[in-house]
Length: 115
Length: 109
Image (cartoon, each protein chain N blue to C red):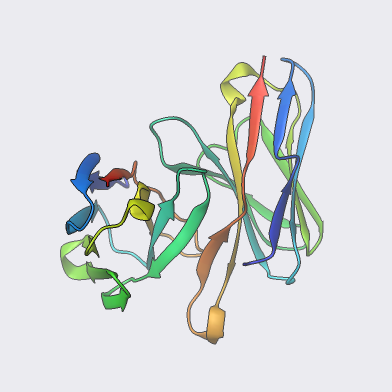
């Protein structure tokens, strides 16, 4: 158990409304990530963070913003949700178990439906 | 561009069978991980394997980085092995994984 929680786990919202998803970790790891998963696809990277207030864009960042004001929390915001953002969102952390090599571990996911 | 291709896309087997899943990637990698997504959607880290061979119980993985492929072997399959298996190399560093589309494995009793 990598100590990652996501909230909410399920959300239905209307087109045009803002939505914020939260990822929380208990171990103070430096690297955190947001991915989305759509039917028939693997996961695609939205944004990632390599420390407090240090974030960068991933492959599919348009329409999303992130913030990391504390080590343990990484927030993903959809400023104005669209139906194309209906997806399952996964948070991940990266750390080196045993201090050897960095590996990525995933949270339980948030299912977001935009109607 | 960067590509990750997994094969086969679907695999249906009887309990007890062995299987080999393949991942081809288009560029040199800093890291490569294999994940299992169970039927409830949970993603489970199976292997970190940028090169060489590792084994964990009935599962083993081999990556031949110079030839740009990785293999996941599952022996004596059990119904609990069902789900989708993803290969995810990191081409750029900072653990920015690029996921293949996965192999959906169904193990029938």
